[in-house]
Amino acid sequence: MDMSLPLSGIRCVECSTGVAAAYAGRLLAAMGAEVVLIEPTEGSPLRREPPFLGLDSGESALFAYVSAGKRSVTLDLETDSGRQAFRTQIETAHILIEDVATGDKKRWELDPDALSGACPGLVHLSVLPFGSYGPKSGWLGTELNLIHSAGEGFLLPNGLSATLFPDRPPLKIAGHFAEMQGGVAGALSALAAVWSGKGQYVDVAVQDANLAVGAFTVQRYGDGSLEHRLSRSFRYGGVIECRDGFVELLTLEQRQWHGLVELMGYPEWAQDVGLEDAVVRSHKGDFINEQIRKWAARHPVEEIVAAAQRLGVPMARYNTPEQILSGRHENARGLFSTVDLADGRTCSIQSAPFRFDKEPLPVRPWPSSPASCPDAATRDQLAARKKTLLKERA
Image (cartoon, rainbow, N blue to C red; front, top):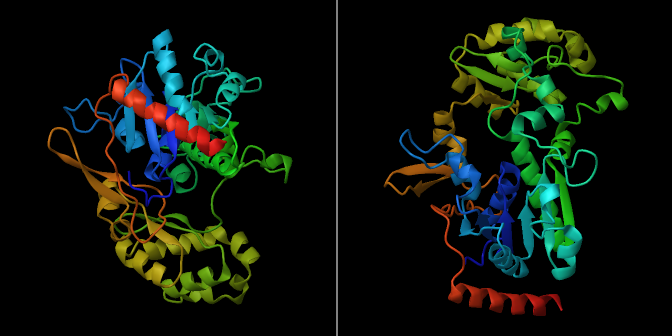
């Protein structure tokens, strides 16, 4: 164990079937926590989720990412012996992460009240689509349900995408944006509970986590407005088409507007003194956008992005996956590490979405296959950990 990592010495047990809880465990593992993934005999359902690592591979890229750094143990929680082995794992843990449906928690001996009595120092994190309390606690929810129920899906596509494809219906962000946002909320909430110094039940609703990001569906209760994908856009800026690709431009501050004017070579139209007023610029957003797009269409992406960043203008290229892996910024930050696959190939994987030092966090491999139930030596090790943990909590 690398004791130099931020969460070295923290032990987590994860019982997950979905991305949100799995990603919470992934973030804790990335920071150095020991995370034991409890899998059913047939393996985690995420092992069978596409995309896969290669055309002929049965290895899920999604599972590989959300399980990096974890250790796997196979348990059948429908049996008494499986539940007893599970309880043994929990008794030595600081954090339990689970996404077991509310109606199944008692059957699997995960009832919050009962578990807190048996393990008073445990931080019990539940990550469900709509939480474990309230009228929607029993509802199922996929990524598609969650991105729309939190309001973000209602606003997609917007800006240039809506202009180019006005007849498109509301869309889902690619990947697992909503579920991973729930995982972020889960990981941070669990750590806050750990640092409070006492065991407690932490209930995270993925819908709430996403609603908190933009709060688009509740803003009408504040200012009375309700955004729509066909009207939601930056007054000027947003998605801009260049000679060989697209960039995103956002100017919120006066100095950024001045930098944009300099970037475009101080065009005559931008010398209008009225444009010094941000309100006037907003009213003339369509005109300004027209001028920006005429200018950008003559220039390659790399050229104007590099110049924009030197001038403090918030602008970035829309990247392809290959460009992300080869990008100067991404490589300078060490965002990706190379890991070996079972068949001898290699792949790149993001180490973590954050850093604590000048060096990126190390990437540890994901479990290639579930291990069997703990053997006698492992059970003895868990028993010793339990004694140590009880002393720490005394």
